[in-house]
Image (tube, rainbow, N blue to C red):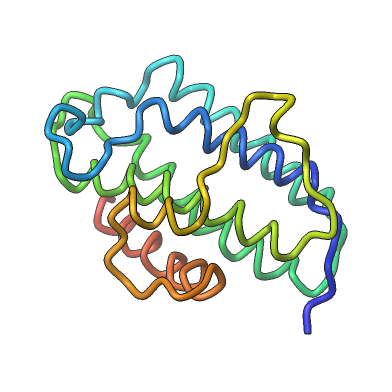
Amino acid sequence: MISKANYEKLMWWVAKFHSIFSTAWPKPGEPALAGASTFIGTNLFKTLENGLACIEEAIDESDENDSGKEIKHFWTAFKALFVAVSMRDRNEKSQQIDFALNLLYFASGVFYHRLEELSFVHPDLDKDFIRIKSFSELVKLCRWPTKTENVKAVYSSLIGEMMACAQDLN
């Protein structure tokens, strides 16, 4: 059994990243929002790139416990996908890039929900106007096709999804 840790700062940064990301997230099935590659290289995208370092610092500062390896493994896959997306041409209209950006949006939300399960404290997001959709709402909005019986199962499956997607983009 994994003991709970203090992931409040990490959760806050992940929630902030997820909230910012929702601005340019290519909502599946909405043709007007397809072609999200135009988001790559913008100031908003650069803000997210800067946020990667803040999240990584919060991971490094987090209580080291049984869940630390799990979090670092997930983060490695997430960051690899983000970097692969950032290397793409912003003028390239591609379903693959839209899928990757949807995957990043979904993964950041699932990451928050997994941290919530692993932490004994939670940040007060309301005071910062940061919103995280419920897990079931996130699955529905992102049209996630795989089994979604619980956060941990989806969280674990996302590592392979993100690594495969990053490899396809490279």
